[in-house]
Length: 147
Image 1 (cartoon, one colour):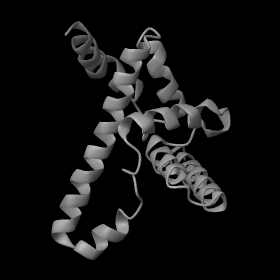
Image 2 (cartoon, one colour; image 1 turned 180 degrees about the vertical axis):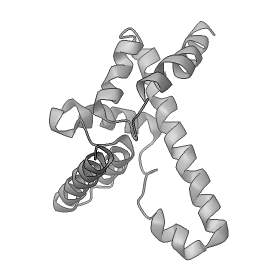
Image 3 (cartoon, helix red, strand yellow; image 1 turned 45 degrees about the vertical axis):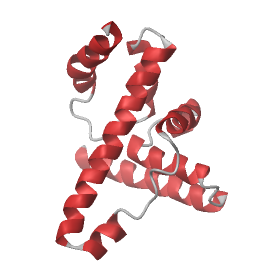
C-alpha cells in the first residue's frame, strides 16, 4: 500500500513538473524514472507500466472519439499497431531501445510504435525508415517551437 501512495505522490507532484514546456516525453525522461524510484526495480517498473498504460488508454480514448465522427478517418489516423506487445514486454523493449543514446530524443509515443514494430518482426528497413521519420518530425517541431 505504501508503494502505491509513493507512486501516486511522485506522479502527481514530480513527473508533471519534469514536463513543463515539453511536448512529449523522450528517452531521458524514461531513464529518469529509475532515479525517481530510488533505483528500486519494482517501483520503477510500476511507474513505467503506469505511464505506458496511460499513453495507450489516452490513444484509445481519442481513437474512439474520432471513430464516432468518421470511422475511416479514425482507422487511417490510428493505423499503427501499439498493442502487439504486452505492457510488461513493452517496458522491457523500451528500456532496451532507450539504452542506445542515439534514440534518446525520440518521443515516447513514437518509441512505443517502434517497439511494437520490433515485436511484430517488421523488416528492419521499414523500422529504420520510421525511426528516421520520427527524428525528422520531432526536430522540425522543436525548431519551429524555438522560433
